[in-house]
Image (cartoon, rainbow, N blue to C red; front, side, top):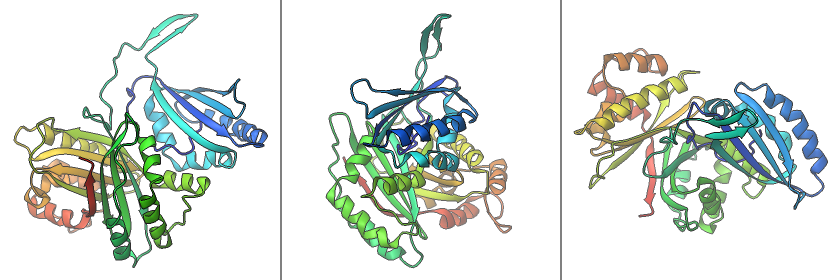
Length: 369
C-alpha cells in the first residue's frame, strides 16, 4: 500500500486488530503505464515491510482514471511506523508524477466472512491512541527557517487573519497554536471532523496563502505550495503526528495556560521518551486536585513536542509542566535526552531550568469558539 500525501495522524485503530488501508488515486491523463510500472516495482518493496499482509490494485469500471489500492496489515502499529518513515517517502516518490490527487482511509478489521467462516475481532472500537473523547483530531506541522530570520517570520505568522472555521457540515477548525523555538516553527491544529478536509480548506484561503508565500523566502528547505508535488513533499516532511493524548475529563477550568516544549531527544529514543511522558501525564490528569488539564505528544522520528494545558502557569508547577516527576523518572529523562552533565537532580529548580531551555515561544493561539 502506498500513501502519497495524507497527514499521518489517525491513531484510531485498535492496536491488536488487523488493519485495512484504502488509498483512492486519480491518475493523470497519459500516465497510466508509468503508474502501473511504478506500482509493480513498489509492491515488491512494500511486501518486505514488517507487518504487511497483502495488497490489491483496482481500477474503476466507470472512470479509468480512478484507481484503488487496498492493503492489509497485521495491526495498526507496523503500518503507522512505516508510513511515517523516510523509507516510505522515498519508496512512493516514483508515483508523484503520475497522480493528481489521493485520499487515504484506515479501518480496523472487526468482522470478516470467508469460506472458512466468519471472523469476529471480539472487540468494540476503543478510544483513539492519540485522539480523545472530545472528538477532536490533533496534528502538528514543523519546519525550520533560516537563522537570523526568526523575528521577521514570527511577525508574519502572528499577523494573519484567521480563516473561516466551518469547513462543511461535519468538519470545523477548533484551535490553532503556533510556536517557535530558535529557527524551528511548530503549528499545532485541532479539528472537529475530518483533518484532511480541514487542512485543504485552510490551504485554499487567500489570507493563509498570502502568509505562506510571505515566509517562503525564509525557509531552509524550499517549497512551492502551488505545485502539487512540492506541496506533497513539504507536508510529508513537516508532518508531526500526535501519538499520545491524555485529558483529565473534568469540567473545563475558567482559565487554561497553554505551553509547548521540544525535548532534545537522544538518537533513537523518541518513542521511549514519548511513552514515559505519556504515562506521567496519565497519572497527572487522573489526580482530582492536579493542575494538568490535558497533554498531547507529537512525534516524528526523534522530533518530540509536547503541548500541555494547565490551570496555572508552567513556572508555578514546573515538574508537571515538564512531564517528569520523581527520582526514577528524572534518571530516565537524563538517559533519553541530551541533558548535559550539570543537569542536577530532581526538583523544581532543575525543572524550571529545563523549562526555560526547552519551552517554545507561543506566537499565536487562536480558537474558533
